Image 1 (cartoon, helix red, strand yellow):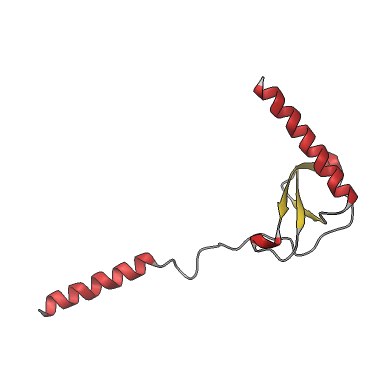
Image 2 (cartoon, rainbow, N blue to C red):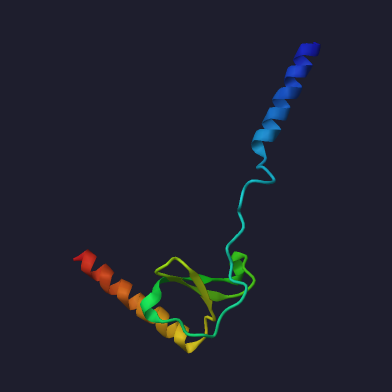
Length: 102
């Protein structure tokens, strides 16, 4: 009886440890912009961009431009130069998509 009780305890312990993720060692934190820069970013250094939204868990709404060197530069989404740079990047990728689909 005692052996069965011990086995059940260890099985329950193993199951509980297996089903809960570890408290440390995992990095589920988002890489968010905390502020944006008003300085325009030159088109020639930008490869792509992503939009950061508040409802995704970040503190501010921003456009994150990815440079050729892999840096992430945060910009205000409603600035005129940001919208223009996004449009240029979109048109470049749109034209590349059209070439591949032919």
